[in-house]
Length: 295
Length: 323
Image (cartoon, rainbow over all chains, first blue to last red; front, side):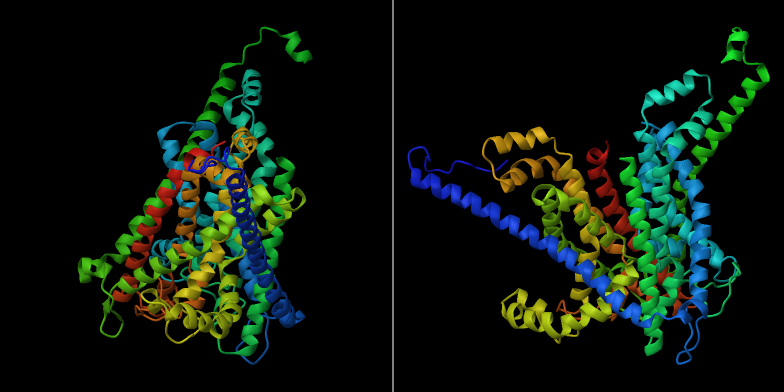
């Protein structure tokens, strides 16, 4: 509220002062506007630079063998098949485990816990987990599942990713359920339906596309997660998909290949980076288009 | 319909009512226990990290928090350097990102032609969706060489000559280091802060803004005099949210920070952060070793740091982002 539109000289008396004040205000406005345009342009340039780099280096390294061959020692070609499959398995299972839990928590927050203390605590904790460093989730699962069970495993990776997706699903489920008008709930209850039927058959159905959006965004988020997998599924250079042993995944492969001194590995890392970014961005665009349909 | 009219006095039979009561009870119970599971997860994370780090806390005492030594050979570990690196890079990232994010949010809410609002807003959100390992590769292969050849020599020649702050911008231009890490972090958190700011700016009642415009205010005066005071708390909350992200970011930082356990006087010098140390050294530490315990203790410290920041952020955002 510190904008002083009238400076100390009285503009009513002095037209020249008034004009210069107006000029100054306009100049300030225009300066900020130009700076804002610049900031936005710089942000877009960053995005463009990332995408262009990925396309140039990624497409340069793209070959059928990327999808048909498994990772091999440096200098002998190879592809990313096992990493891609490993990622699909881990992300898929994590989504299958995390989504129902997140859905129930979100339902609890929206349908049972409005205004209750326990509900507020759960909401707060879930929001903390939403932004908590993913590397800590990895360390936690390492302590919980890797150390006691004697080794890195695909399951540990799945659990870590599931923990990461839960708060995302919670947030969208609660948001979507709270958009449903209460009259609809009252109508269902008034017809004599029990509460759980109201939630499952009416509220969930009404919120379905919103929840799907949330799940898609969650999948996009966990698909690119690297840090938690370092301590859980570890990575593997073989076509090994048993969940009780170290399991390959695309982000981990990219990480270890990009940091390697071998040119062919670095190129494979770029190909993998392009794949994962395209998948993540595509999921985001689909999810956002869905969301726009709801709002 | 016809059934309802044929037996208007039909009362739900006792077993059916009990069945639906049971269904309600089961479903409600499932929802509550899922909520409890979330609490357990957070409690479990705190507990496991603390227990895992306990041997290190026992061996080094409170000194662990600020001791700058990290020597796997002598088995002496301290969190000083990585805590310093974590806080410096995160704060520097905030300093770089906040003005940019404000510009983007101001642009999207007040300046942007309506037709461009959606595509540009989506583009900013996509920037937030890019996985952090991609930022790491891009930072390492694109930004770091750029920094080494152009940006850092320029800054060393200009800012490096200044008294007092000059020391921060001296030294050889490696390209990697604290400054580059902070820059990448700034780009990564920019969309989060910008999106939060835009969302809260849009919640300012139009009447307030229109009144100010009606008095002849310029767009910037409306922003400074009406929108910002109205949304102050949430804006700070959004910034804290970005800070929380920056503190725990792992992969991108690991690629570009230079990974050296020392506190250099220059921002261009290499360093490390808690997350980068844990990610890099974890593979080389044996189960049950003091090093592993120290890494878990570092994780515990990171958890405390980000928990406080995120909790404050949530508290500040709570009131405004609720519809």
